[in-house]
Length: 128
Image (tube, rainbow, N blue to C red; front, side, top):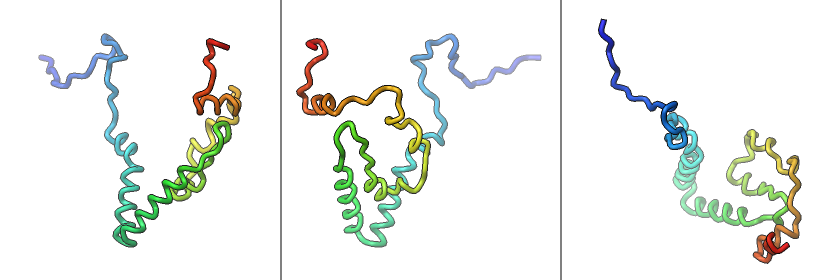
């Protein structure tokens, strides 16, 4: 019996350096990554057809206004108004209750040091 060779060339991950190997992803992964942008474009298109272009512009202005409100650097900014406008408050995902920075083992930086860093007046650690 003769052996039939296939024409499929799979990468040999054992003999090659795995750091240079490109990541092979499933086509559904790219669809899931782009789902939010596709949904927003469809909602924007539907809103402009039903309510007019002024409704879309009004929603964009609301998003820009609500994204500007932030607290001091060490305090949590919930951005609840922006989440409500974007519709992100309807589902509870893993990100909503896992990896809470307040429950972290590492201490939070002080307000004083964060504001110095933000304003660019912090002293380098090499001097201290």
